[in-house]
Length: 143
Image (tube, rainbow, N blue to C red; front, side, top):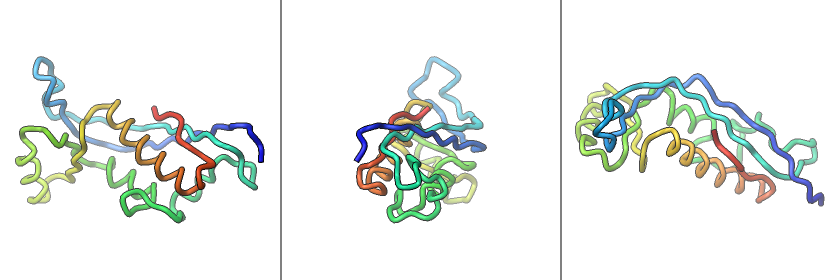
């Protein structure tokens, strides 16, 4: 087996989210606001029998899942027209009520913000890809 490490990247784009930085009380970021987002994931590892780090076509046909979904389904579930709230946001009950009234697609995470979303994606995709490739591939970076 080779000891060379190769990288490939995958860009996910075309998503719209809404959130607020409730802890940023001294800035306008404390208000609910939206973004069109995209992100890029770097996969590192040895090449497979097809000479690929990872076959991106397999994102919909996988053995393992992310929270019970394929990676493609999970990305859409989390970031396609969703309202993302921090689990400690003091207004979380209001957002949950809005979700119960089918006004928003609420996703609750530990913390919000670009860096925290990158951490969430890293954690979810790295655990997935390590399982899916038996440790041959890992996520090295998320932007």
